[in-house]
Length: 315
Figure 1: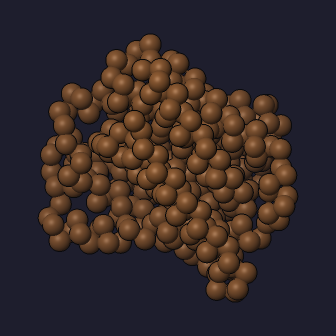
Figure 2: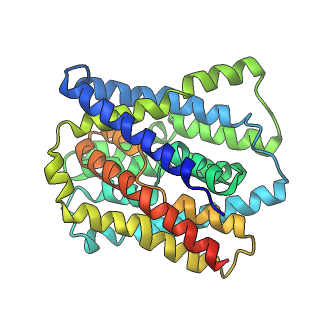
């Protein structure tokens, strides 16, 4: 029987941290300028450190053939989500210039901050979740950066051109993700001192991200957030419809219940917390991102246990 106590506790903790950031902004401890600086800290230092630390994670064990199969499935999932993201502008009548944020939120979920702990709670193993996170780390800082930066196209052609430059693609997030993947495939590990240092730096990524999201929410009307029909419709699409489609398609090709289950759970994660940080980095609408991260995270407390239960009884 699936014990969802750990899942609910984890999501509850993230919610409390977000509300702490909200309160911090209202009390003047956090502000917009601080949000941008902390976002830059997460994107360029703490998140890359966490990714590099994963290269020496003792949970990343298993045959290279098994790992390659899971990686191929992960790439297929992101390909499917990318196609699904092309529909959001029409389905939800997204205003011109905002579609990049919605596409990003469709493709990328809160895999590292919530996905791995949730998978551990449901399946008792994080190996597959960690593998799913490797291509996510590469894509989120390259293709994801392009999606969040393309809104500048109508404003500044030069900035839009820069979205395709090697300088934008070869950022700390991509470099650290590629390094972690190569280290895993080659079997190399960092010395204990280096791994412990990276883990220490990376450990502040989740709480700092949640604080920034909560602080960003302080500039929005919570009443308008909760009565916004579009945010619920999009969350339904992100948290239920797409994971169910992935489950129905995946069960035709994937024989392992664990691999299929991890695939569905990872695809059912709420909008990535790093969306807000990257919106600050690329000058996009961080307030819009914070609203959707906040609501989708709350709703996922209900949707993820339901999906897990449906998969278990249908196995």
